[in-house]
Image (cartoon, rainbow over all chains, first blue to last red; front, side, top):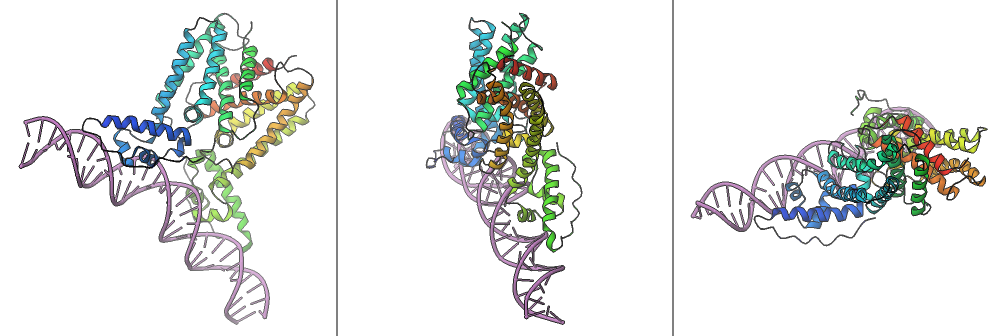
Length: 211
Length: 211
DNA sequence: ACGACTGGGTGATTCCCGTTTAGTGTCGGT
DNA sequence: ACCGACACTAAACGGGAATCACCCAGTCGT
């Protein structure tokens, strides 16, 4: 899946105080390539070419390659956190809240597969765990936002088994499992994704939560 | 997580007809390193050093690095398939069968984390999808073995929703999600893994299957 | 006995990656 | 006029996978 890159006509040097504009250009180019070709496809040199600048130039704005892609991922996860925050503010019962959050989570994953893989499917292989901590922390905040309604459900004594934390972890894992398989094994001929998500959701909620 | 490698004392040249013995030695060394250091940690040169042979020598027995690690993974997945076949032969009701298979699957994943990641968590990034087809085919056979009892459950009209295939996919996804997160994010402070697995199992089965 | 053949094995090389070093050219302020 | 900060680069490094042109030791046919 190689993408046709725009002719790398040299980009004009930025005027004196405007180096920071380059940063945005780099992020934009990197995001495009990252979305199209994934982590290892988004080469430093490719990104630099797309911006119209030497590969060395990227190091004026970013410590290393990982910082670029993690910044992109960070922005994406922030959108997810925002989404969760919005849902948390809706005046609906906790079970619906959990359901809507899980739906939003899975939709996010399918809409941002490369980001999702980078953050949620990679161990130290792609990115050393200590670099990814910031993004993971954001992910944890998402998880906490998600845990709140689960705690409410637990407080109502409606969990069939386990603690609120355990239930939240299992619910999350279930969603993660489905979308991560859909993302990483697209060649397998899966049943309809929407139906699978619905069955996963209904099944887990019915299985873990009493009426 | 770097492992201390044995001193690479030169290994004697094999007599004329015994080149194939080298193949086994390579696989053994590669497996050790792969288990200890994962995909990108298991370098061609490291493997060659461990065997006591030049890196070039590996290419006499394997097309490329991926073929080595996929062969190792293949063997592991074959063990999983065997496991599933054994369980399929046990005279127990289909729900128990499904449960035992899911337990075996998750135990396998936690026992062989690097193999599991290579086969079930990686997309084209680590290994191009066309190389991995053999292993995926084996994985599919595991899935089919797992689907059989699910089909039986469906035939008994005991599925709350969806088809047998969909139910099997969701059950598999749930297990995969849990173990893949446990494997790839070991730094997160999870609840007890066994309890989580039990909750996932109970929850999904209760949620998808009627008595 | 001996030359040719062949299978096991290698060192040097190629290409691409991320990253570093040592700069170059230009602009604004004094 | 000139100096320093700034935007940027060319060249190189080290380390990956993979390939190339070889070499060397047995073995086989004669």
